[in-house]
Length: 355
Image 1: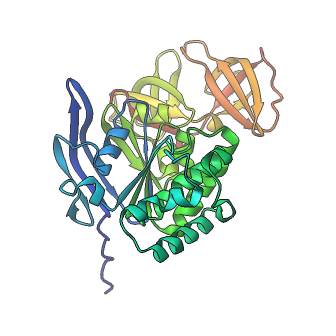
Image 2: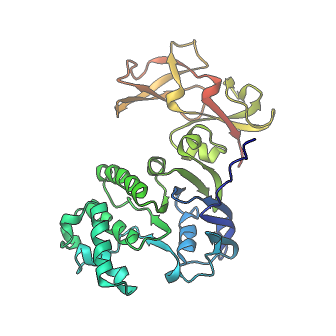
């Protein structure tokens, strides 16, 4: 008989962490496990507590309660400068008077690492981030994406167990940001360091992370890989925050949601029968048809086209917010056209109405 696999203990364990600033609760009983080599994202709106947690991991804040262990050792008892943790700031914080190579070497030199080893490690990391040809340039001679790579190189050259990134791509324009998302993921795979990224950008989190923790008002609402988070949200907040969604309020039934003025809308089983619930269905799961042939009827009030996808906005009588529909290719439906809409039960999720 084959023995069951032994579960590897997490690299980082956050248990019951709480932090308040006066009357404001920044973190409320936060518990997370993060694995070795994982790219983990803390996602949520501004003020939800994700940056406070990052600062606790870095040693710039101390929790009011709870524990944080790294490889089983108490991280909170270790002074910030002795933690095998590096934080890459949103502003990059490069020294303008130093060359790229000197910026990267600075932390190693402060630790009195032998000169030959510093030179070797700087050269190695410059190759890794693709900046070997720019070693002698100053930060002002680089593009935004290149400066971001320098900041990353400076962070990983010290070979931390954990690299913390606070909104690392927010200063870049959209096109550069998309390229740097791929670069970050490649770099993380190559160096094998555990990355924890704080972001309010759901697209960034979905593109980068192996798993995502969604925060709201200091609490962790859900931790899952991107696909599971997108397809199976567990709360109304997560359903609404992660990607576009159509939300309907009503009463849970075994085969869907009983929505006032709309009737029974099909969905996978969720909350107990008779309890207040919300149905979430993604725009790409909604199918258009002739009026009177679907679950809902409405009128198209707007049509947009980008990214190879048509995005339609449909006003439905009896429903406060328009229904969003996404279809591949240019739409054949014009503004003002009456349409029917439908989806299968397996394409919709029921979540509790109140979190």
